[in-house]
Image 1: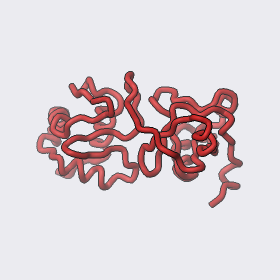
Image 2: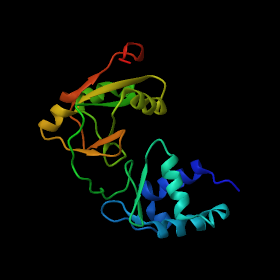
Image 3: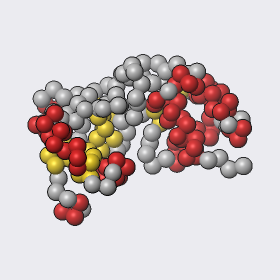
Length: 190
């Protein structure tokens, strides 16, 4: 039987990003859990996952374009997207000069007044390119807008940024001073 990588990825996301207690997993302060503990929990979930191995998880990670997870030294963790009650520790890093955030137009007035906040997540999610921000925005609705974040200026003013992966950066919050709404998609730089 062929492994359903989408279903597996979604289940691992639930286990490592949102509800580890439902999988009887305890994440450390950086979100790590042993690969064997995760495999044991997954094997109990679905009959087709009873022979799931660490190599299957490694294949899933290697084939994913979104880079949601990382495995190292017999452990695995989600890199971003957590909605856990206890905030995971991230190491601050110097962000790229410009980052982007895709959202719905109806949120624009509030964002320009109050800034970007993590809402139900632990961190605000920012993209390194307009295309990724557009993909994120389209998941939220059809009337979308892309926000340009002056990350270097924000960082210089004490806003902490954290690297999620090659395409995603995280921040605790972004004040409105550093946010600019871009023109419609047809006017965006290519």
